[in-house]
Image 1 (spheres, one colour):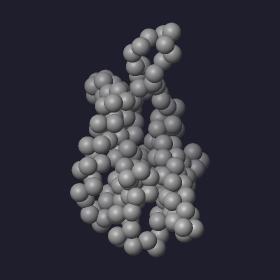
Image 2 (cartoon, rainbow, N blue to C red; image 1 turned 45 degrees about the vertical axis):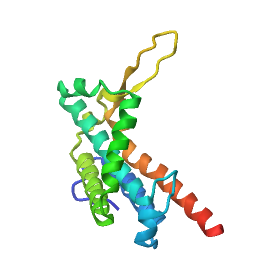
Image 3 (cartoon, helix red, strand yellow; image 1 turned 180 degrees about the vertical axis):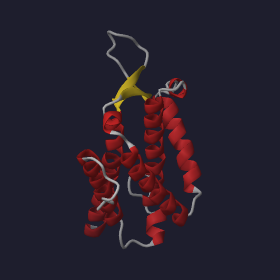
Image 4 (tube, rainbow, N blue to C red; image 1 turned 60 degrees about the horizontal axis):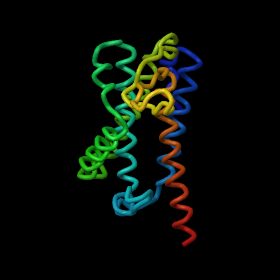
Length: 185
């Protein structure tokens, strides 16, 4: 359960609860596995559980950076809008290659850091800030009738916060299915 002494609103409580439950679910999904299994057995494609944790903290950092840009309304947000899907694929591949070099202990510490930063983010958001909108660096493809170019996407701060636990739950399901299959084989 999230810490209650700093929670000021029902929304903060709900969001912290969801983040905490998603983290607990993810940790439970690979509980009891050996470090060798965590770091070498492919779960989704060629990604191991270690890779998935690195991927989650990398993307959560990106969500928080986009959120900070929205709240600050600074020109840094405009620089980030030059990315398209291929840029993010390349960025993620580079990030994954770097984090694959990390030890299990370092990945777990990074995952814990990521959770702590997610909690701090939620605790520090003011009610009105949850409702703010801003552009994010990932893009959407408009219909062919409109244009062939990518269009920046508007997101609500509240939505960016929910990505943290929704993304964790998605990967928890992948690991749970992998474990079920592994146990029946």
